[in-house]
Amino acid sequence: MFMNARLLLKLLMGPEPRPRVAFGLLVGMLPISSCDSDPTMESEAIATDGSAAGSDAGERVEEGEALLLDDFTASDSAFFTREVAGQWFTYSDGTSQVEPPDHTGLGTTDGEVHVTGEGFTDWGAGLSAFVAGTGANLSAFVTLRVRASGTGTIVVEVVTPATAPPAEGGTCMGQGCFGHYATAIELGPEYEDFDLRFEDLTQPSWAQPAEFSLDRVIAINFLSRVTGGTANIDLRVDEVSLIRAPTSATER
Image 1 (cartoon, helix red, strand yellow):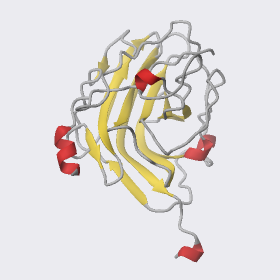
Image 2 (tube, rainbow, N blue to C red):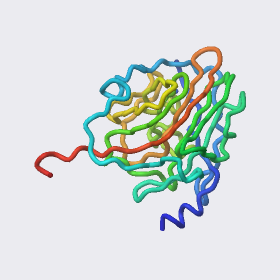
Image 3 (cartoon, helix red, strand yellow):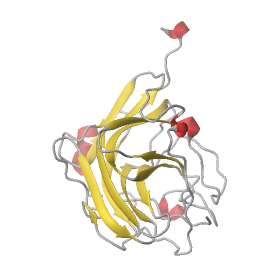
């Protein structure tokens, strides 16, 4: 079933609003988003000292079984496991060029994906893991592990129906939509493992308050955000995994 699904996959945060979640086109699913944003959007800083991960950035947390989402060795933009499947693609505010091009899938080289771009002036550019269908139930997992390198700050967002508007597959109405639960990581020239605990993610101050639930995750975004002036993105990702809750001693 998953093989068939993979063959069918196509190239696919101050006040509000946020840039739209990076949606792509999946067969029979949602249309590509225009990723529009209100130019009055202001930025909000998110700690990049690793505190959102409950430890110093890169330090491994107590963990259970790891589910590999993608190691980018298949030279395509699809990812699939028994529990979650979908498509990788870049997205941007359209004020400059991102590579690989916006919403056209990914090309991988030597087991990594490299996203680059300069001079974004509205809200920025990023990489999205868009989940197929109506989303995935990730409630069995406690940590997102990302092996990444590059330059600058990347905001990692978990997109759920409560923070996304109906046009983006969610239920949020009115002001404060796109205030996804998120944290930020500071990239360096060498690859580093970032363990991001879901329980430590927070919404920006301007967001419409919403309960954080992993019962239905629409996408995971890696965003280089405009914080004044322009935004550039230089992001390399080697591997992304989901970590289950550790098994208690009584269960072993």
